Image (tube, rainbow, N blue to C red; front, top):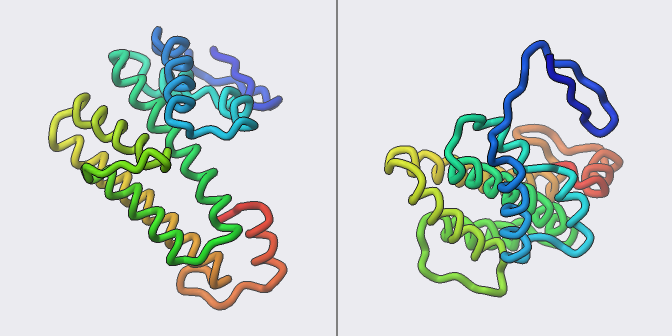
Length: 187
């Protein structure tokens, strides 16, 4: 039986968890990769390290090749930092500005050859796309890229809902609820 601690919450799992032997090295590689692409603000290093993306990837792919575990950790890192970026953008942007940012990242994942080095999420997206294409068969690569597009577009929808204070297909949110959503970054 495995025992896991999640931020002070002790959980006993009825099965033995197995992590990839590559988890620890992937953890460090993923942190280095995120730092190299300038995805982390200076104050985000401790929070990012505590998320343990390498360990998470190792649990998801206990028998995976090192490159697969590494790709899973990098993708998770990317989504973590993209979510942070979008939450900060939501505080001072319009739906159009958010759409422009999402489109820049999405075009990188689709294979645009232009990468603006001043946009870390775009250059990291180019790098991830190359890894996805290198590590998987074409049909799987296409599916992963398609799912990343759905993930990215969901941020536009969520921001639009927050900006207009309307849930999808719903009526206007109470002003206090809209303020709470903006203050907490909940989309």
